[in-house]
Length: 374
Image (cartoon, rainbow, N blue to C red):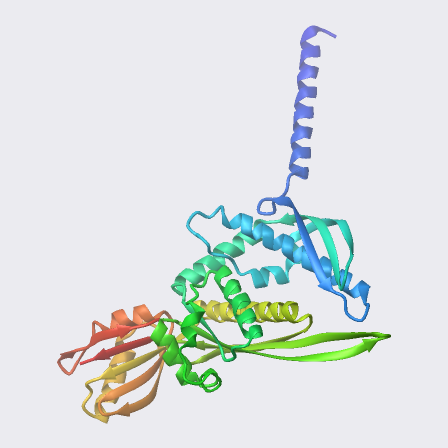
C-alpha cells in the first residue's frame, strides 16, 4: 500500500469517527425546549389515621410540585421585564409530573404527625418557559388588573387565610390592593354577600377584581386508644366579582383537615389556585372570543333616540356583535355591548361618533365600562 492510499484511508477513518461522534452527541443532547436541570426539593404531608403509605405518596407528589415551582422561580429571573411577575403556577403544577423527567429520593421518614421526603429531580423547563411567556402576554393584554381580597370574618383563621391568598395572588402577578383597605365596611357579613356593596368598595379603592371570601371551621375530638386527638376541619370559600360591573366571574371552596394553621393554609392556597385558574381560563376565552362592555350614555332626549343611537353603534363600532338595552331613565341609557375586541377599542370608536349633529364625548372608562354623553 502506497503512502497516498494510507493517508486517504486514515482521512476516511477520521471522518467516520467525527461523524459518529456528532451523531452520538445529537442523540444524547436534550431536545430543543426540553432542557433539564436537577433540583432538590422537600415534600411533606400530614399523617391521618396512621395511614403512612398515603402520606408518603402525598409527600412525594408535594416534593415534585415544589421542584417544578422552584425551577419556575429560577426561570423568572431570566426575564428582565417581568420584575416580580410569576406564572400560572396552578396549571403548571397540576401537570408537574409531565415536567419531571426523573427523580430519586434522597431521604424520607416520619416526623411526628408529618411524613417528610427529600428528592432530587430532573425538571424539563422548555414548556414551563413557553407557558410563562403566554400568561405574561395575557396579563398584559388585560392591563394587569388590580385585585382586592375581602374577608367577611375577623378571626385569626380569616387573617391567616387572607395572608396566604394575598401572597399567592401577588405571586401570579396581580397588583394586590392592601387588604387593610377592605376593613372599610359597615357590616362585614352583609357587605360580603352584597355584590353592589362589593363593587362600590372595589371602585372606591380602584380594584378591577374583588375576591369575597370567608373561612368556616370546626374542631373534632376523638380517641385513639388512651390518647385524645383533636383535628380541625377548615373550609375556605370565595366568589370572584368584576369590580366594574359586579358580574360574578367564578366561585369555589376548599376543605382541609388537620392542625388549624396547616389546614387553613392548605385550603386557602388550593382555593386561590383554583380561582386564579378559572380567571385565566375566562380571560383566555375572551382574547379569542367576545367580551361584554357596559356603556352608559347621557343626553338622549327620547326613547326613539335610543333606537337611533343603537343603530348608529351597530354601524360604527368595530367588532360589535350584540346590543342589550338594560335601562333608560331620565335621558340616561345603559347598554351591554358584546364585542370582539376590548374596551379601549370601543371607546376610540365612540369618541368619533356624531348623532343628530351632536358629538359624543367619552367622559370615563374603566376596564369593562365606558361613560359618555352628548
